[in-house]
Amino acid sequence: MIRALAVFTFIPAYMILASLLGYPIARLVGSPTILYVLGRFGIRIALLLAGTRIMVEGEEHLKDTRNTIVMPNHQSLLDAPIVVTFIPSEFKVVAKTEIFRIPFFSSCLRFAGFIEVDRSNRERATWAIQKAVASLKKGNCFLIFPEGTRSPTGALGPFKKGAFHVALDAGSRIVPVALIGARDLMPKGGFRIRKGVVRVRVLDPVDAGSYSYEDRERLIAEVRQRIADALAN
Image (cartoon, rainbow, N blue to C red; front, side, top):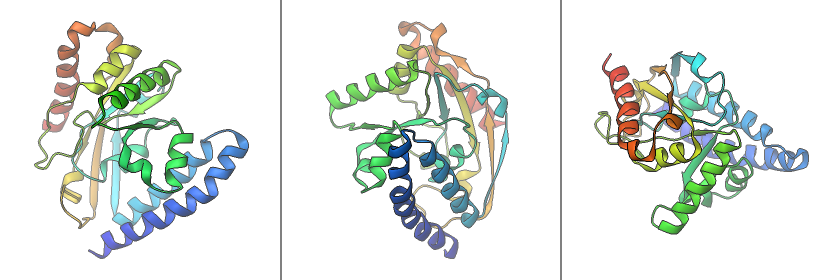
């Protein structure tokens, strides 16, 4: 419990401080790089406070992240911070609208190219997909959790189609990622953070550009099966 209190005390305080420091500098130099530097630094401190160690294999699949979507399974609040530590580029995220209501922090997200999506508004959701496609075609990298939400049991859930529509429209390269052990350290619905190791397997990429729109179910099945096999092994 002390570990969790330390993490959740540190995170909001650091978010405010880093936003107030980083955003003016980013606007001044016309680049979001400082925001990524500060963000990754804070995340590494938070994971250190949490006692979370990360072992990654297959990082060579992320040497070139142009027009790439990184797709991990989703079991824990630790997942996103863990993935941030090994994506080498200034990646983007399609994030729910609630996150964009955080003062100061939301300005940083928008300047970094993160895209707000309101899933309750079909028109806004369609706009978010179109914006993500355009960003990918410019050569950007995105982090998307295809399950959409954390698995309450740890079992791999069904994949939502939105991320794959984006990948097909942009002709993107999909890099599946298997996160193993995060749920053991912090399961959904829990506040306590246990000390331990999370294993990460960055898997062979899938070229969405080689699939037609009519084959999207086969594309979804291929990506999901690669993650499922990695989790099973």
